Image 1 (cartoon, rainbow, N blue to C red):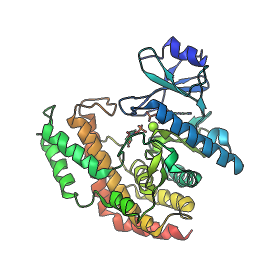
Image 2 (tube, rainbow, N blue to C red):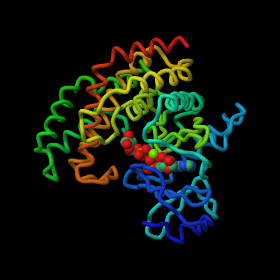
Image 3 (tube, protein in one colour):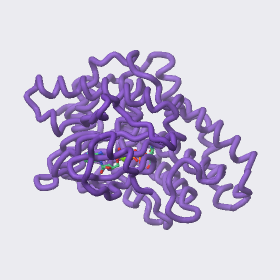
Image 4 (cartoon, helix red, strand yellow):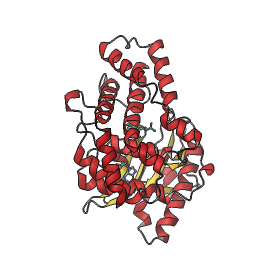
Length: 356
Ligand code: ADP
Ligand code: GN1
Ligand code: MG
C-alpha cells in the first residue's frame, strides 16, 4: 500500500517513496531525505502518546550528544512535524503516519560480524547511559506489560487452550509447550527482581534487535539506536538479552533447520566486551549476575510471543510465509536451550570484561 497524496501534502514531500528496512511492525518507506512510517495501530494503540514519548526522548538524547560534542544529527532520530505543526498525521482513513529525517548514509543489518557487534553493543550500553538522567515518569507506557514474561506465558497458555485456528495439536507445537511449561519457575526472575527492587528500574529501549542499530554505510562506525517506539521504564536486562539473542545466534531469527541454531561464541564475546565497556561503569552486581540468564529469558519470551501469534492466526507480527511465526518460535526456543547449555561460559565472559 502506497503513501497517499494527502499524507505527502501534510509534510510537503514530493519525492517518490520506496519500501525500506525489515521491521516486523510498522510500514516504512524512504522518500528523498525522509523516512515515512505508517504506524501499526493494532500494536501501538495510542499514537499521540507514542509520539510524545519519542519527542521527549530524542530531545533529551540530542541535548546530551551536543553537550558531549558528538554528532547529534546522526546520533538519534529527528521527528519532522507536519505543516500544521503536529508530530504525526492522521489520514482520512484513520491511519496514522509519522516522518523522521533520514539518517544519511546509514545502514542496518540483520546479521553482523564481531567487529560491528562490538561497536553496536557499546552503543546499546551508551544508549542506557544517555537516558540515565531521564525521568521515566514522563513516559507513557506504549505497550503495557511488554516485557512482563509471566504475563506473556499466561497469554500463550490462553491461546493454546482456546486454539481458535486449530493449530495447537501439532507435535512441534506440543514439544515447545512442554519445554516452556518446564521453565515456569524461571519466567518471573527479572519481573520479580524489578518488583522487589533488587535490580533498578531504568529507562530502557525494550526492542534492541540488531537491525534497530544504524551504522555508517562507509566506515561502519556505530551511529544510533533507532526504533524508539517501546522506550519505557524497564530493566537493562531486557535490552542486553534482546540485543544478544538477535545478534549471537548462528542462525537467522526464523531458521527452519533447528540443527543450524546455536550460540556464536565469537559474536558473544564481542558483544559482552562492547556492552561492558560502556555499561560496566554503572551496571549493578545483581544485574551483572543476571546478564547470561537474561538472554535465555528474552529468547523464551519472544518464542512465546511468536507461538501465541501463530496460535491466534498471525495478527501481530508481519509474516512472509505460512507457519512463519511457528518457525520463528521454534528457532528462538532452540536458541534458549543452547544458551542454557552455555551459561557458565557467558558468565566467565562477563567477569572477564568487567575489569576493562
Ligand atoms: P519497525 O518498528 O517496523 O521495526 P523501524 O523504525 O525499525 O520499524 O524502521 C525499519 C527500518 O528502517 C530500520 O531497521 C532501518 O533500517 C530503517 N530506518 C528507520 N528509520 C530510519 C532513519 N531515520 N534513518 C535511516 N534509516 C531508518
Ligand atoms: C518486533 O519492530 P521490530 O521488527 O524492530 C517487536 C520486537 C521483537 C521483534 C522480533 C513493538 O521488532 O519486540 O523482539 O519484532 N517489536 C514490537 O523480531 O513488538
Ligand atoms: Mg525495527
